[in-house]
Image (cartoon, rainbow, N blue to C red; front, side, top):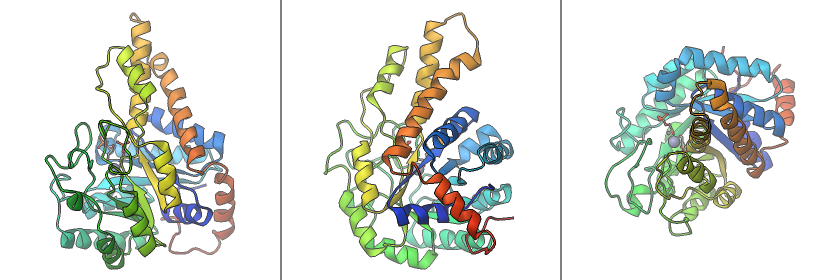
Length: 350
Ligand code: G3H
Ligand code: 13P
Ligand code: ZN
């Protein structure tokens, strides 16, 4: 089955009340772990590549690898999404390569750092939607500023975003502005800011009601019941992986991610796409540390990644199960197969 756009996957998730984990991939190991977990749990897949992942892995090779995964796992509905595209040009280059979905992140300027004006965001996102929909590619937009309500914004490590302190109002998505934005741009999915941030250092204590603005999700979903909501920064940062890293020479400070129960609650409120990168990074590098510590004379790359692959696969499978996506892969691919004779807006790009 060829790569498919994100819209029909999220429509199916909305119809059946489940959520899709969207895993960031960087290399063969991350992709393979996701695909094996999806095969094991019969789940549809969204894999996404950031601009830095495209640069690291050579995007032509990365796309070829994902297309090969579609051939290797022919019954799994598979979408390749550009994560945090910083301009319409970046999104176009992704579409030209064969990405079937793009995120135009106009919440930040093209430098990916400075907060952008609402007008700028509407302009770049609307232009991207025009271009993408003409090719059957789906578009995710973002409104609000990703950042922790605890620290007042900012991304401490390997994420991007703002330094400094922002107020609750400045960080969170304004529900009425979300309505205006969707109307003005025509996006298929909308990333909303509810207090999560990228990277491992999200919260210094388990986030309860004051740190995750679930009420904002509910308010947006009530006003936009047909727009698929996206939660970024949704890694759980498992304590077991922090311990694994620290037991093998790592020095991670104690930290808390987004609890799985809160993600489940958000899915019940209309979140359909849940972005996960950090958890996979921790599983792979923690396992590599453990192997190299136990085998100091080894230089076996496959040995180094074997447990990491298994840990990432188990983590992905758990997310597919807990978000309710498990068991929907074959159903969705059967539906897609029966509708391929009547191409629609959501058709696969040439
Ligand atoms: O958007 C955040 C993701 O974790 C991507 O991070 O730009 O280091 O690949 P990256
Ligand atoms: P995490 O850093 O929580 O995994 O978030 C990833 C993300 O939002 C990618 O866009
Ligand atoms: Zn993100």
